[in-house]
Structure formats: structure tokens, C-alpha cells
Length: 182
Image 1: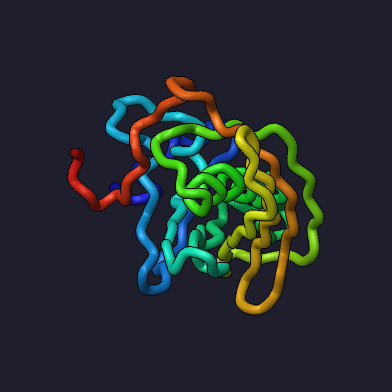
Image 2: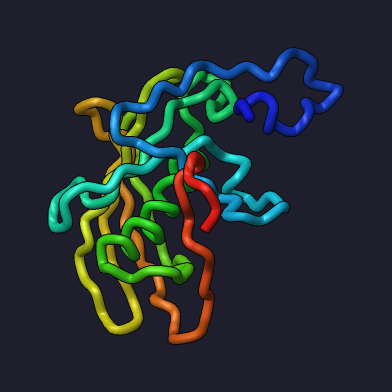
């Protein structure tokens, strides 16, 4: 299903057509399936498509999230909306930190985040987000997150997520969209 086909219908007062541009992620990126075998849509299914790539543990590329800035992700100035950047950083803070820490199968709720907006990204730009895990305690993960387009950093964030206790907040594994269900 294409982005346009999966989008909710436009509000009658807005008029116009739902416009998208080709995503064309760089090699190695796979689309994230936030729906995870469910027949209902959650918040994350409305913001993408988002992509991920895993690299060598212990490097800045251990977990990379990416997106092509679509028209519907932009503010009236034609740059990516700050709320979209914060949402992506929040997802990296949870998914990325848990991946880098080697914790699987659990949802990590955000406890605290702070953001600094550094530069705009424009419609059509490829944005990547990376995480540096700063501290890993028994119950919390502390990280720094950077969103960038090319060599330009566009957002810096600090994030703290809670590591769930045993038996709490288990989730099905997020899978690439082209993977068959387990």
C-alpha cells in the first residue's frame, strides 16, 4: 500500500490532493512496520514512513532511523515540523536505546526529553537520526540523539527512558514491512 493509499481522507474544508514524493531510502534501510501484526492503527502508523538500519554495535551507526521529509510532515514554511522532529527523536530514544543496550521485546516509555532545534530540513530531504547511549542503569537508559540531513545537524535531544520490569510492557517485535509475520 502506498503512502497516499494509507493516508486518512482529507478534511473537506482543506481541499486539494494528498501529495507525496518518492521515498527512495538509501541502501540498507528497511521500513519499520509499527502496526506489528495488529489490524488497528496506532499513533506511529500515522507519521511515517520511517526506516531503520542497524550497524556495528559500539558505533554511531548501531541504530539509525531515517525518513524522507514528505509534504504532510512540513509546517507552512515548507520545512519539517518541529513536532515531527521531536516524535522521531522520541522513537530513537526508546527503540534505539533499547537496541544499543541489547534489550529486546519491551516497550521503553520516555521519562524525560529536551530538544534543541538547530537548522531546518526541507521537503524531500533525507533525515537520519542517531543515538549515543550515555548511561545504562538497572532501570533507566540515558542518551543523546542527533537528527541530521547530510552533514547538517538539525536537532539535538537528550532522552531518558525507563527499562520495564520483568513481565511489564512486553511487545511484539517491530519488523521490517517486507518481512513475513512470524
